[in-house]
Length: 214
Image (cartoon, rainbow, N blue to C red; front, side):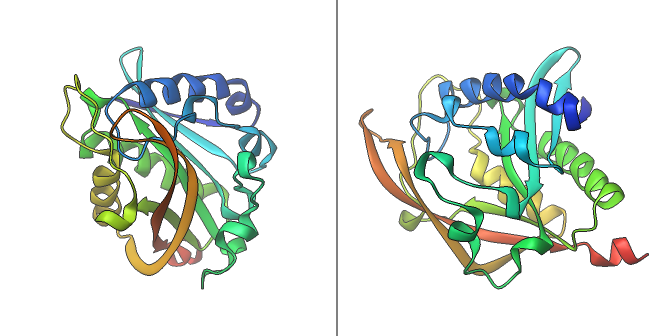
């Protein structure tokens, strides 16, 4: 597996790659699927000065993408929500966090090795080229409060991305906090219909300040 880092103009030139992966992601078995994920606005990535994309390739085949950017630059354009609206209540200052915003892996490659490989490349570039003391991620809460879990037939993988996220975050030293964010968006339901639903996402965080100081 090859893990390639995209930054700056090269990344902006490859945002169509993200759209392609989002289509694979929404066409496959996944939990809590936003109804229009493949067409979601990516302008906040293009506007951020510190955005990073790590892509996983099996030979020449793209099989996964991880997106990261400063938490202060993340927004929810469709619903006109800024990072302050979304994260202002958290105890960790928004300006101190680099945010793992998306992880997309096609079903047959959803393994801890692939998720960890992308994350290791992402953490490496955050430590080397930014000064953020924390890396954070949001993961759908387990249980009914998390939202609607959609099971689509025909997948060769039994792994849900949110479960895989918890696994790789734990492996790499993240701690789950008692804090959460609620996102409300149009969601594909179990009956195949689209409806507005609230989803509770738990905050996971890792302190990398010691690495910067070393």
